[in-house]
Image (tube, rainbow, N blue to C red; front, side, top):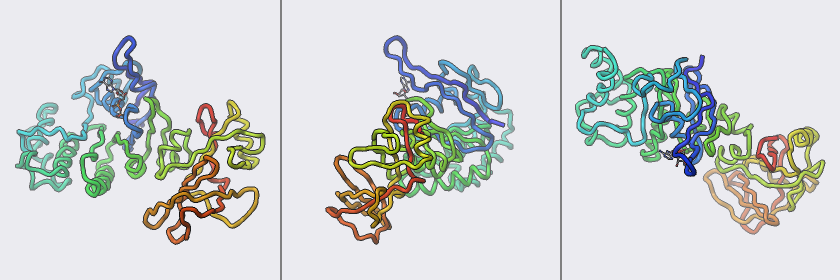
Length: 363
Ligand code: ADP
């Protein structure tokens, strides 16, 4: 059972010549109990999508359902959702208890006793019981974020909506809170839509991730699906750090000619290219960790110069250059390579992606 659904949802801002299509015909299901991450670069429509689900914006076209009920015309407070914002949005004059109980008082028939019990239980779950009488001004950023989460959890909604909730925390606290949020999610099992621009956060937190660009859904899948089987060039470049190498070339019938070298296609790759190509250009993609250094001198290896060696801890990232083509390659830190060296590399066929040069779609 899907917990919420977007069916062909479009959101336009403005009218006349100044229209911005912030969300462009997005359809997706939020499965029962899943943690779905909306991820993409700034301005791709993540927040607007979340705000449409919340009812803070009205849809221009399409339908939004929560728990099988069409909510297009339902007010935010009646949608059975709870939202957590980046800036916490706590009431400064109210205590933590006041902040957590306010929504319950306004939207439920629960008695004072029941509200107190629920707030106490939630505060305990979040380790903020000792803060209940304080006001937000007397709390650290991390504590305020816990209170904001507590305020959402205490309402026991059908759906949590979280808009970059960790981005105001320092790096260490953010990592810690990611784990805590995942644990909370496992405990509560409430479907969650979580917005972030940070692909690492998306990869580590999402049961599934929905990658957006230009208001359009590029791919929805598990983090590993998006990583290993990117639907197009955009997803390939956005998911994974350091980014996938992408090199444009021409399909010659049995190879891709990128100028600096020819990549010979396997039979399987050639068939896939022939079947899906729309013009004669192809973008080859390979992740830095999949390029291998080799001593072989056959048609599948390329001699290439090392321009810079970037230490990354246990690994080094080599920046390679040949006739205007640049490649990044991660190698273990004990490989003795320095800038100015020449190395030979090869692309294991199982790790090479091919995208249609015109549409960018995976072939
Ligand atoms: P993201 O959350 O991915 O950064 P947004 O959903 O905030 O992106 O914005 C998507 C696009 O819609 C952007 O081009 C943004 O400028 C535009 N937009 C968002 N809100 C409004 C608004 N209230 N009025 C006009 N344009 C808006």
